[in-house]
Length: 271
Ligand code: DGL
Image (cartoon, rainbow, N blue to C red; front, side):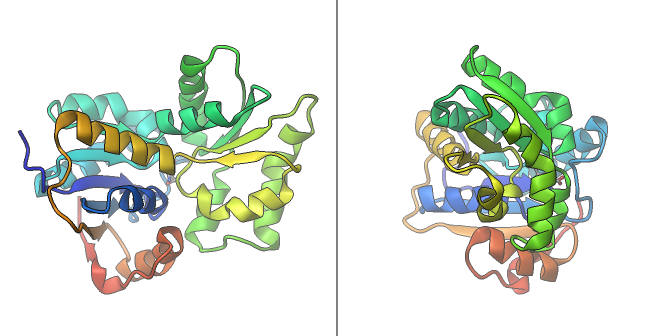
């Protein structure tokens, strides 16, 4: 039985997973978290599945080596390419991805039964959301859109303004102009929630935006309770690791985390 006061490991290609970490911190205030952003090799979304699976294995290995009781793959691209392989690599470690929780949030939100999902090229190519939504409901229609440029905009800290709006129109307009258009837009990349306001501004009225953060936090809370792994601590803490650029990680990361983050809080690591 692992030590219940060990941290929960969380990783992403960069700062995107901090949107999931923020939800985890809010839902589980007594937990310790160890967050790794693989900023040296970002973006994952345009890389081959084999490279992403290798990066994911190395990130998970680095977190496991420091001691974690549960792993959250806070990157849709890595979860799509590597979740079963990670579960095989670490057979005693509970591993949760963000795709199934995101799919559940979208299926719960749609009224018309037509969901658009926007994610990286890798996640869309893998068909991860199409499969996860199909497994939850056979009569939901999915329009899958790849929007890799949003990752660069979000990492640049450009969350609003004319360039974000132009990119959003280019990616979204045709999908929402089709007959019987989607009524729900699922943000299938953990970098995208920071663009939510700009995306809502170009979508037709009444479209619901959903992401995986809150449902992933709920899934983690349930799993901790089921396995008897919930922290005995009253107050948690988070330690940050990045494979490149702690200053940049802290500066842009604060936008994703919704609170100030100092470069001194970010440890530079090699995985
Ligand atoms: N944030 C990641 C995701 O959810 C990947 C972004 C990237 O590195 O391309 O897919």
